[in-house]
Length: 495
Ligand SMILES: NC(=O)C1=CN([C@@H]2O[C@H](COP(=O)(O)OP(=O)(O)OC[C@H]3O[C@@H](n4cnc5c(N)ncnc54)[C@H](O)[C@@H]3O)[C@@H](O)[C@H]2O)[C@H](O)CC1
Ligand SMILES: [K+]
Image 1 (spheres, rainbow, N blue to C red):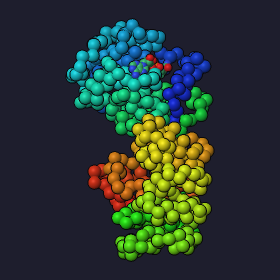
Image 2: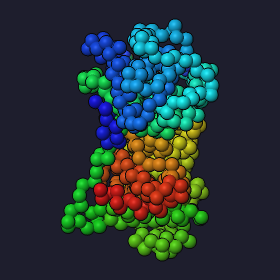
Image 3: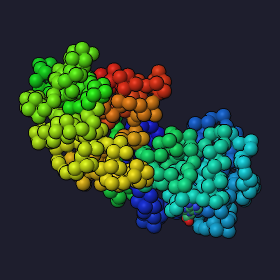
C-alpha cells in the first residue's frame, strides 16, 4: 500500500543490499514472481504519477539495462493502455536486458509501444519524464551516456518521477555518484532506502512515496533497519504539572560569546528559555553581560574572565551548553576545560568542537552537534568525505567521542551509544544562516534541563528546531533569521 507523507512513511530505513535481499526473499522465499513484483512496482509508480499530475497525457520513460529499467517498461505499457502518448528511451544495449526486465520490454513492444534512441538534448513534447535508468543496482559513478542522459533529465522542464531512487543517488549514503537526477517525485519500493533522507537525498528525491508492493511485513522484519526516520510524535516532552515551578525545569548555563560574538551566546540562551528551561544563565566576556541582559532580561548574564568566576555558575547549573561564539583563545580553552571537569551534562558546539578536535577525549555525558566542517576536523577528514557517507561519519563521531553525536545538515543524523542512527526530515535551506546552530544548541540543552534523556533530547531538539524553521519559513526561506526560529519554538514545543 502507498504511504506518502512525512509521518506516514515507515520509520524503518535500509541499505540497498538489504532491500535486494528483501526482493530475493519475496521471490525465492515467498514465491512471488519477480515479474509480478515488477508489475506491482510499475503500477504503484504510475498511480503515484497520476495522483501528482492528474491531467498529464504525454510521458517519456528512460529505461536502463536492469530491473529498474524493467519497471520503466511496465510504466510505459500502463501509460499506453491508459491512452497516454508514450515514448520509451532505452539506455545501454537492449540485448543486455535479462529476465524480468526483458519480459517487461517484450510486453511493452507487444503493446506496440514506441521505442526511440535518446538524442540529446532530450525529450521533446513530453509533460512527464520517468527516470527508470538506475536503481539499487548503482555500483559506480555515472559516466558517458548515463551521465549525459541524467544531464538531459535534469534539463527537462516538466515533472520528473524517479523509479525506486533518483538515478545516480547512492541509496546507502545519499551521496551523488558523479551526477544524479533531480526528481519531483520518487516512488520507492519494498524497503525505504536510508540515502533518500540525508545528504543530497532530500534535494534529489522531491516528494517520497513508499509502496511495499503488497509484500508481507516478514520480508522487512527479516532485516534489522540500518537507521530510523524520526516522526512528529517521537520523544515528546511530558505535559507540565500544574504545580510546576522553575526549579523543576532545570537551569541551563551557556558558556560562550567571545568579543564580537555575544549574539551567539544570547541566542543559545534564548532558545533554551523558549524551549522551557526554568532558568538560563550566560557566562560570557564581561563587556557583554549587561548587553545580553538588556536585550533579554529573562537571561542571567555574567561577565566571566576566569575559572574562579565560572565555578559558582557551574555549581548552580544543571546543564551546560559550551561553544556558541566561544572562539579558541586561552579564555575559551580554560572555560571549556572547567565545563568538562564539572561532570555536568553538556552540549558541545561550534568553537568548543574545534577545541575538542585539537585535544580529543571522550565522555558519555556530552552531546556533540557538529556541522560537516566541524565533524571533518573531529574525524581528521574533509567535509566532502563526511558528506560522502554521513551515516558512517555520525557513527564514527559517536564511537570516538562517546555520548550523543548530532551531524547537522540536510537530513540531520543523531547517533547514540546503542541502536541505529535516527534521521530528521525537517528544516529548509533558509536555515543556512548564522545563529541557527546556536539555537539548536540551546534547544537541546533546554530539553536536557527538563530531564529528557540525552538521546531523546537530541532527537526532539533536532525535530523542534527543524519544525520551527519550517514554520518561520512560511513567510519565505530567504532572509530567515535565527531569531525568527527562536520566536517559533514556543509554538512547536507546545504542539
Ligand atoms: N525483482 C526485483 O528484484 C525487483 C527489483 N525492482 C527494481 O529493480 C531495481 C534493481 O535492479 P538491478 O537490475 O539490480 O539494477 P539497476 O536496474 O539499478 O541497474 C542496472 C545495472 O546497471 C549497471 N550499473 C550500475 N551502476 C552503473 C553506472 N553508474 N553506470 C552504468 N551502469 C551501471 C549494473 O550492472 C546494474 O546491474 C530496483 O531499484 C527496482 O527498481 C522492482 O522494483 C521490484 C522487483
Ligand atoms: K531510477
